[in-house]
Image (cartoon, rainbow, N blue to C red):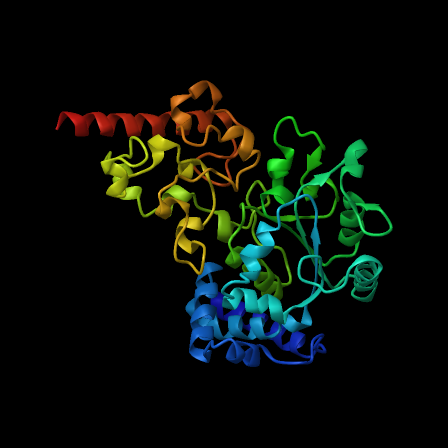
Length: 382
């Protein structure tokens, strides 16, 4: 009964959105898929996957497909701050477009410095015009850390010489929803690593409006598109953890769904890169994998058309979707549990994404290290 009521509410919302005029008239999402060799069957399989990813019943799949078809009613402004553009590339997949990247082709992307043809004064005009024209209706996505305070001048953008922080504040003021895309925008990222010479800050420190963090270096395209579709579905912010990350994407640790988890439980570890354990796909914890302390769905969603991810390729997770990872997760090829005096980084990286506590974190770090050591000892004695 509860699911039926929710289904009815979403269907009603999508029907009302369908009455809005299209922003882009040239082609439908189905025509776009056909042009790129994607069948309706593949599209519906993708919709089913997105439905499951958002923890919705399979019966909601037709609504998910309808939501994707309605993304052309949704104006998006994407700002670049201090970043490498890796988050944009994760989404756009210029070498092999996915359905997720085609969804973003279908969206009315009003401003995106990497892909738009305009430059200089014309680009600046496009941004200002989009903010005015779609006031209160557009989705703002920001990529990159933002120099703040007396250091704002380190990021100066456009012919007017506006600071990056000014651009972010102006665009955030009238946005319907705001997403910090990638770890740099979510938490400051590498730009904010010690000694942080430009005083780089996350987007949430630049604006006082609610910001949904979508961290990762980079995040998967599904985590980016999933948030857009969630907003179309519900018109509200998703359920968030203590770091304002959507629980549907960041509610579990990398470790929980890792394909090497069985080897961890069996005490089978890679001792050094290239050894027999590495050839057999053993757990990478002892060569620095931070999967037990990192909340993300990389182990489930993967990258490069979902074919692989760092742990599958043979290198441990570096914890890039956690706050201050560059300072707190290093050295990347050493386990945190071997340096207990340096495991008390920040808060929140404990057994769940909701509970916060340094004491719990200490127990978790010690417990994982002890588990690894005890099982390895038993294996050596056998």
